[in-house]
Amino acid sequence: MGTKRKTYDFGDVIEREEFHDGRYGGPGRKRQKRKKPTKEQIEKRNQYNKEKKARHLLRKYFGKNDYFSTWTYRRENRPDDMAAAKSDFAKAVRYIRKEYRKRGCELRWIRNIEVGSKGAWHVHVVVNRIPDTDIILAKAWGHGKVRNELLYEAGNFRELAAYITKSGKTEPGLKESNYSTSRNMPPPIPSIKKMKRWQGEPKPKKGYYIDKETYYEGINPVTGYKYRHYTMIRINRRI
Image (cartoon, rainbow, N blue to C red; front, top):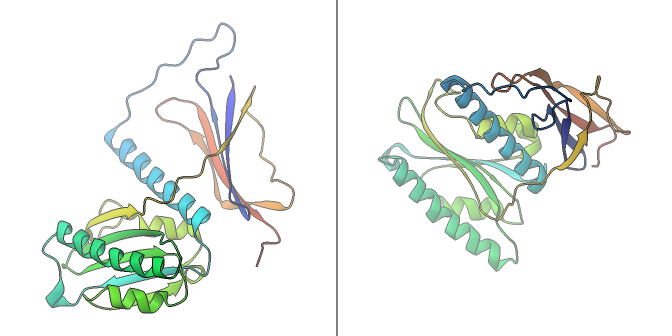
């Protein structure tokens, strides 16, 4: 049975996905019937895809010296609902985008608006940093405090992607959340290689090593076919 390999190359980091392609069966071999996924399987897959897309955007469009920013609300300024919180964020972004354009720069962002079980609202935002970004963000957000930290201080992008896409289904103490990104970040397109058969233990590309924490191999519960994914990291990373 044929195999496909998808490769996302981000320079210092390369992600690979390998899976059996059900369209390419061996001679005289019947294609296996697909099983209807359960609600839990669908939710798990949706969360995986959301984290993956966020991770890819982080790796393609942001660097370690960009900002991971947390915007909080003073108790008296808390929004009534998610619609009001989204409106507050949109208003702030309009101001930030205008200030970036004045400086000849384009704004890019990824955010998650969250409210805890006790009613405390806040926004996590990844934003590309330019001179005066800290001042611009503080002026844009008048509802509470703004705390900024560099992305490399917030953990690697795999952990950050999981953190900024969390929801009530992944975080018990979270009552509600809303994830979104700016529209000026097209998702990366992988290169695709077709292989005649399932490959043995993967070997890293020269100059890279396979991050063991990212390696996973299993059976797709819906198709019944093998799949695996893993990340390779450059040994001598660029500073």
